[in-house]
Length: 90
Picture 1 (cartoon, helix red, strand yellow):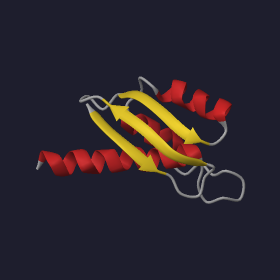
Picture 2: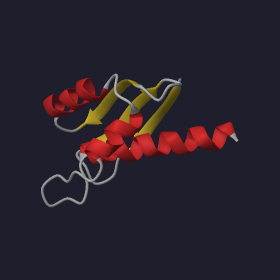
Picture 3: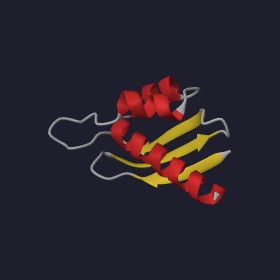
């Protein structure tokens, strides 16, 4: 299992608590702060999905005039987790 606490930037949510299994399947996601109902929906939709599939679908989504969004920040967290996993494997 891989776990990270990712501090978001540019969004109403402040942090993402993320756990991915060894097969790169998202096991659980929690957002701290932000739009509770929308973020619960995102968490339920991505749980059980492959990391790369979620990144492909959500990367680059913007929130209004902001250059990012909570789904986009989730992609940043997943990418960080992938980098950390690759670095520890070496």
